[in-house]
Amino acid sequence: MQFDHYLDNARVAPNTGARIEVVDPSTGEPFATIARGDATDVQRAVSAAQRAMGNTLDGAWAKLSPVERSNLLFACAAAVSQYADELAQLEARDTGKALNTARTDAAVLARYLQYYAGCVDKLHGDTLPYPAGFTVLTVREPIGVTGHIIPWNYPMQIYGRSVGASLAAGNACVVKPAEDASLSILRLAEIAAEGGFPAGAINVVTGLGGEAGAALLSANRGIRHISFTGSTVTGALVGHAAAERHFPAVLELGGKSPQLLFDDADLDQALPVIVNAIVQNAGQTCSAGSRLLVQRTVYERVLDRLARQFALLRSGPPSMNLEMGPLVNAKQQARVRAMVERAQADGIRVAARGTIAAGASGAGYYQEAVLFRDVPPDSELAQEEVFGPVLAAMPFDDEDAAVALANGTQYGLVAGVWTRDGARALRLARKLQAGQVFINNYGAGGVELPFGGVKASGHGREKGFEALLGFTALKTIAIKHD
Ligand code: NDP
Image (cartoon, rainbow, N blue to C red):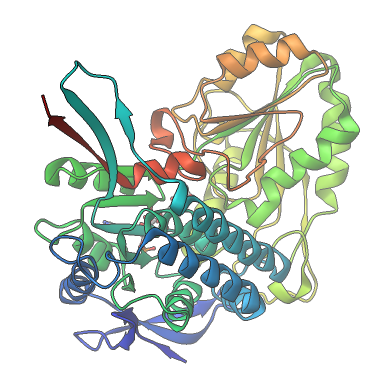
């Protein structure tokens, strides 16, 4: 299989003819190629998007009425549901995630598109009080051409929350998916075109981050806004480029999210959620609950129960639909293995490990789930994002100590609190440094709920109406009539 860019509603071969092999993470075998885009390809995509916008919002896409835009997004959501199985198969093969997880991702994508379709005709400005003789109003206009750098962990979902919101606000999009997860995104652009999106509204350039991704950020390309999800290191590059070129950037950069478990918590309710929060998508989730802080009075009991649950966790190919698939590529596998080995070499104890299923290929990028206990708060395992199914458990004595531990990393994406004490839950919700706090649940990731980080987890918000506002330029019009 050979996949080209998707620009101006057509498949377009790469300018240089260069291609990148697409590897199945469950076997390590290549099964397709994608186009290796360069600056010329990116410029072509941006020019297509600029034409769709027009010079004065008179392009084929920009001149659609809000209702027409909304209808196209609703139709796209319906088409995603219709093609959900095909999309899930593509994404599962490309990223290694269990087929059921990929099906869920397709359903969430459809929901994002529905949500933003429903927002289009509710997006409006205001009239503002001002001295007599004036009428002052604000209008929300599209920003122009928006760039979307999408990672490999949840391509469909992240496409939904960033491209869906940007289109709803009336912008045209240039998307650079991760080289390890481009296939579903290419198909989505094609599905949108089949559903009637004008040429240039959605353009997908595939390739390497350092080439096609970097080209998207270069000067004079015409990008007016960047939405990025990925590592803190690349996020800093994106933020730097945005500052130099004077365009806004939404940066979602992962985390080291804590779950705080108090001795009055309902353990039957909490423990399965805590396990799922770290093994979901094999731990390759920005909001993974990767630190577990447990009140010392129940620490041993909790560790004992968790260890039994971890021992039952299995990793296998997407078709087996086990708790976990492989990691996305050899680089991530090596990175996670190295972090696990360093932690053990530093004397941090493993409380339990999962297994790799008998049917899984030895050449696949599998990593069994690992539960570490008594993890020192200043260790790499407690401070750095592993991005694998590795949970760092540590005890605390009281509420203040729990808050200090929870806030004691560079990150601040999400946090969970498990307690039956309502006042404590509210106190902690206010004290925790995070963009989302979950009380007696974790990762309630509804499309309506604004999402994003503080500190090194990034800035700006995705999801919900908040994200939509971020994709608009607010114009104030002051009219003197007396
Ligand atoms: P990156 O941040 O490098 O990749 C994220 C996206 O950025 C990909 O689309 C990538 O493209 C693109 N990119 C890479 N370099 C550039 C560049 N110079 N200019 C513009 N775009 C670029 O993450 P990695 O894939 O290398 O993963 C490393 C670590 O990052 C993970 O272990 C994890 O800790 C974190 N991460 C966090 C994610 C999250 O959801 N918050 C998602 C993914 C990773 P390409 O893949 O083609 O290089």
